Length: 112
Length: 115
Image (cartoon, rainbow over all chains, first blue to last red; front, side, top):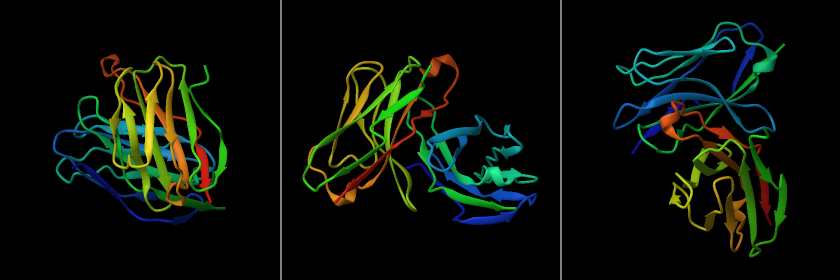
């Protein structure tokens, strides 16, 4: 079945550091790919998405590129802030009315 | 426009008790979902409803039942709670695919403890 693997945390960075959170996937078809973010005590919010190969999703300084050849969708940000501290989830959805499949999440802590 | 709402926010049960977690959305979405979130496990799908009148099992349905009461509401019932069901439960909804978006919207969660 479909699956998502993302790097284990926690990840601790200093403010203004560069962030990469790795995500790879296994899917039978051509899924859409997503990054969701969960701030402390809240539900998940969509951060960015990409629906086909070579698409780049971006939002709030975060970026991720859909790489079909490496089945990857790594999340990057050039300069993190304390307010980016959260849990980040990579997810995929196959075509059709199918549910999202999530990775296990990566906790990011940014210290001033 | 409240989005996805869940009640209660917190609940403590004793083993064997039953309860229903409520979820409602006011965005006229077709699909609704129930997930549980456990440390180190990410989000796991319990049940989902692709459209009003249909429900399907997800990855971890045992010990749960659901009801899609109408287009707005999707409830999750624990008939006989067990400590293994201690978790944070999230409800989510998504519009009809033909509308050109597949963004899923999440509620704030219900933190359930079973003693």
